[in-house]
Length: 495
Ligand code: B12
Ligand code: SF4
Image (cartoon, rainbow, N blue to C red; front, side, top):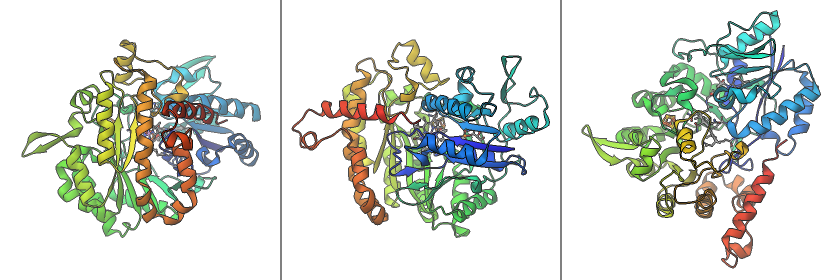
């Protein structure tokens, strides 16, 4: 069968396509795990910015798909709806399948969208079995994790249990199925790899537990090294590790760093997401090893520097430093110091706008970011379907915006007990632009050619809405913020 797999073009503030266009790891993994006779094309629509409609038209023309699969996050739901309408118009009989976090956690929202199937949870085995059933004209009732229609009614088959990656035969992603070009992270070709799936924490803002329960499964080192080589052979110079929480088993991660070094794969640049506690508690040995393995940027899930907010976010445990078995307080500063000492950059993941937040508590977090992190990645709590945090915000009547296309993490859609959503976002927006600017010299040292060519575009993106007068302080910043919000609204019309 001809199968076309699409990821959505929607992006958010910290990942503008002018500098960041990353592949979707789910789709190549799905492509690598269907039966081999199928002809699969993967198109990451982030690569076709400004011409999404034309690209889909062309892909239908070239591949004549019998099945189209969409990978969707919540803030991309509206775009997914538009793409479903376009696909139906181009080929009314095509089978449309939705998968990923949003269809898995809010399947009811997809029932009226004009699609045929929903794949809930991990998709490799479910999608493979779905194609077999379509091909053989068999029934769908025994396919775990699949939602389908019987006599006009949606039927949600029982969930499939998470893959045990150690035992299951999940084959390598099929990068050769990608049909669009232009992946980049600040000018270097980027790819994604996975080494594990799952997490055993339960941060209240995160969707992972509702998606797959609390568990952690790992691929073997050999499989990971093969995956890295495959990404490199497809041209990648930078690799982003998309594991949910790679730091859950620090010993294993250390072993992996060593395996990367031993295999001579440490000439690539690596980006990873990490817990502050793992770095603080093991960093003396772990951080030098990471640097030798090629790690360059570490996204730290700091979440918040205030204990009360960490309690609300249920993220205190993963941010606690320990010495000789005793808690010694917040791990953040120690983790940052260890990473800096080993010449790695810190992407500071912070969340501001929890229910108890005041102007002062938000400013304290922004001041911390200004002082200690190299690249800010500051977000607002966002009530994604099914998370414990969503329930709390709803019960307290703090959700002020139900337009899901704005649930991108940098648009404040909830208020606190003390501040409006608009004010929270304004505080972040005002501070964050300047923090990003400060990282330009470091980016220049690493990728001078890219920065020379694209710095004006990046500046224009970071400061959109601003004028010379607002930058010089001759105009109220709120006017520039209002213009920024207007521009951002326009950007969301992707299809
Ligand atoms: C890595 C990652 C990123 C990377 C993305 C790199 C990339 N291009 O892939 C970065 C850092 C850039 C990122 C950014 C964002 N992310 Co993110 N990210 C993740 C993370 C950690 C892992 C996702 C992943 O790749 N997993 C590996 C793949 C193989 O698994 P998977 O995606 O789940 O796919 C499987 C199934 O879902 C299913 N499936 C998926 N798609 C499809 C499609 C079909 C047709 C089928 C059949 C099956 C299927 O099958 C796959 C294989 O089993 C998750 C989860 C987490 N613990 O936080 C969050 C997560 C997906 N991100 C999330 C969000 C909100 C964002 C942001 C909007 C804001 C943010 N928090 O940073 C931005 C938006 C990005 C953008 N487009 O601009 C949310 C989504 C919540 C929701 N309900 O939509 C998550 C769940 C985190 C959370 N807050 O809970 N993210
Ligand atoms: S530690 Fe990370 S992956 Fe695990 S629940 Fe918290 S935010 Fe989600």
